[in-house]
Image 1 (cartoon, helix red, strand yellow):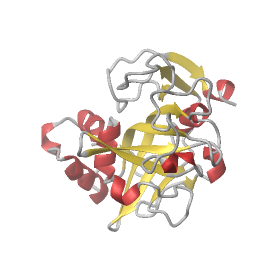
Image 2 (cartoon, rainbow, N blue to C red):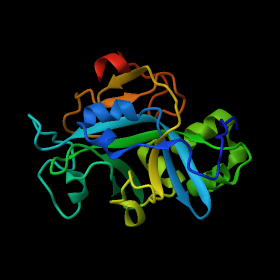
Image 3 (spheres, one colour):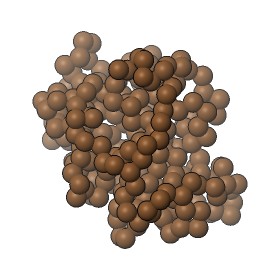
Length: 239
């Protein structure tokens, strides 16, 4: 299938991101998450993918507040994890059966998050991890070309949670900065110098806010194949 093998597979790859990485506004955290790894250690396996697409959702302290954000009306039992501390998983259900994963941002008491929209799956071509991710998605590996199967695995917020086995019951509120956490975001040294930005998708309010970020030319980005957006040098715009 052509997935790049990870050295030391079986252990979590790369270096865990510290909490301070997430203690910034989501519009700054989102582009910096591109190229990082989302890793889930479960049942003796490690599922992992490179983050290639993310969307920022702002908290109610912003002017104006983000009407598309779950935190828009303030803290509730459902969204309380969004109000801190940073670096936690916020997982919610869609359509009654699928899940979406967000990463909390900002200092404690301020809400903000980044929705992980797409991953490029990583692992050995013949490894148990990739095979289980395919089963998690209910896909037939013989029915797709290698490139199309890679795209089908985790190109969308619901798909990536399904592929990695992430659910609200088991993972909502997990501390991604805790070394003991089974769910982490890690840095394996992959360099991103430029990102594309567009308006967010799949929402009905604030639809023109340019808070969707993705890696240029990556085949695993969700949505249209030929995405057009504003190219932004990461080291210039977001430092």
